[in-house]
Length: 115
Image (cartoon, rainbow, N blue to C red; front, side, top):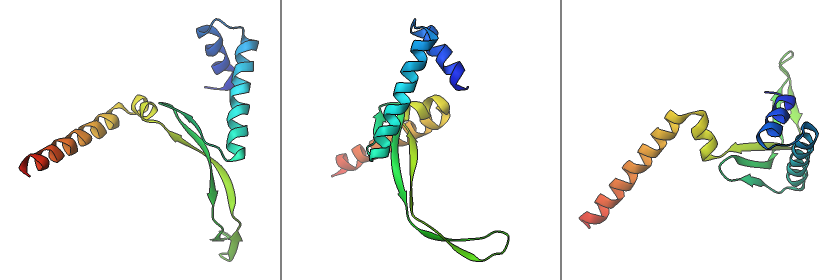
């Protein structure tokens, strides 16, 4: 899906013109970019979190010559998907995670009952 398709869906689902939907999308993107640039995290519960992460300086290798080179420290944007988003993309993994949590809860209750 590209930007134009996303704008079209936003417009049709929210009874907006394409220009208005595009303006809303542009505002959302600019707001997220501005906040992350300042070092703030933007958390959309159920969807995910946008944040900036600092990468330390490190030594790399030039692939053609094999010589070592210094890679400077940098700050990069990062997106971490939320639980609902992960569950929509991979429902089987979400079920496995829920089953694992249920087993752990049952084991904790059993341990407390024995004490």
